[in-house]
Image 1 (cartoon, rainbow, N blue to C red):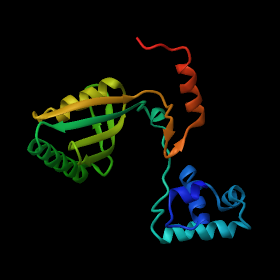
Image 2 (cartoon, rainbow, N blue to C red; image 1 turned 180 degrees about the horizontal axis):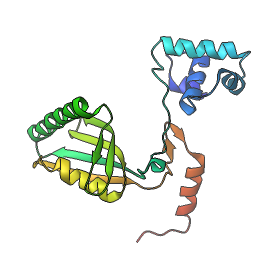
Image 3 (cartoon, rainbow, N blue to C red; image 1 turned 90 degrees about the vertical axis):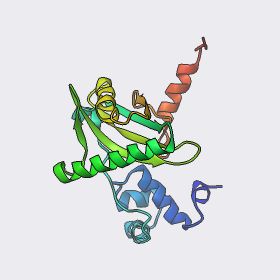
Image 4 (cartoon, rainbow, N blue to C red; image 1 turned 45 degrees about the vertical axis):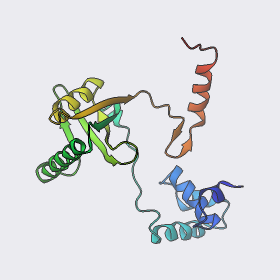
Length: 197
């Protein structure tokens, strides 16, 4: 079974293949799309792209930013877990109020100073399920700035436990939906001869 049929039955095969190519590279031209998919002409590729846009499946095309080149080499995730649903609610309420205040004063991208550097917030996600938690994702000028951000801005919520995770290196076995073959090979090679302690 082809990848198009595995992904969804809500689109035709050509539209699904166009979607997969656009996920891989949102800047691909209609002519490159035509060649990649073996379509008759570039207007055919453009036609399928426009259908995906009209259906609202493709909402926007985004630039891929190299945050390290901008001075933010540390990618991080902070997991915020309340000792009870009430404490998480209070934290989320307070955090939403602070985001709203920031928006009104500074604009719609959160760049937060820490003692020695800065943190850029990428996502704030509220999760529900077996555990309720808030996940904060972003980029920082260093590992220390992630810790400083957590201590400066999240410590005001005493019943919240935070776990800070930094993402080392850019080798992700699956990235933006696709298996990263080079990374997969590097990771497999790193396990050869390695022993558990």
